[in-house]
Length: 287
Image (cartoon, rainbow, N blue to C red; front, side, top):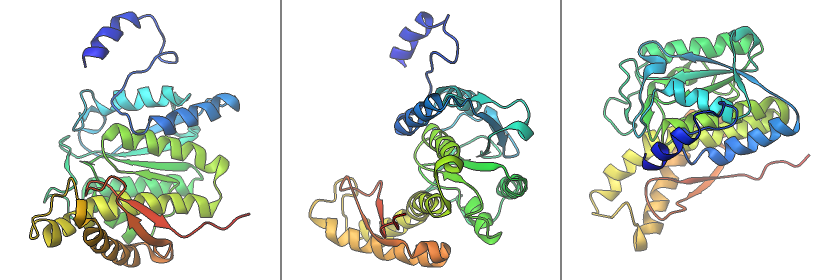
């Protein structure tokens, strides 16, 4: 905040294509790579945005200090793109899953349940519609912080359209998810075949939905709390906890991701803590 207050007046005369400041960090590598690809190929993609019913773009997500519509616009310019005036002309349709009341709770909150919601049904309806029209579709799932909206994933699974979309992200902060989903969506039709696209979706579903919204809570309740293990620094408990998480994750993958769930061969905890995992997948076929 202090740095931003210092920079803002000094950049007042720069256009949105020259200077960007927005909430987010972990997605920036993906955003800059996508920007480089767009610049090198002389592409200025148009991105159309559709929000879930309710507060929508005026939502101020947890850990952030501006409406998500402003964050999205800044990410679009940072990607080397431009907001689409009409959805029909957009190169990418970004469907933004926002909470109806604008309050983004944690994915671990008791309100994050599988029962389908009005917002989830509308996002999936839009996904099906635009996919059938041949559009590239990305979902930025920011209804909750640090994990997926289980209601949205339930509806996507129930309609059997988990792999009909081109990109999905629902991890960490809103800016992280939005920047990643847009980058993934812009790269997918140009550089991914069906297998690669589905493989990347599988990683996001395993991490954002399977672990962050389901399994992490379950292992906390079954293992971490009863055994009084420090989830922020597993230490000598690493192997024990890792084995539990791997068991639960493989069960989740089998139940929810069908043949794509078979790609999961294990998991690791890269920072020796409960907050995040790295899904380990079978090697991809070479072409």
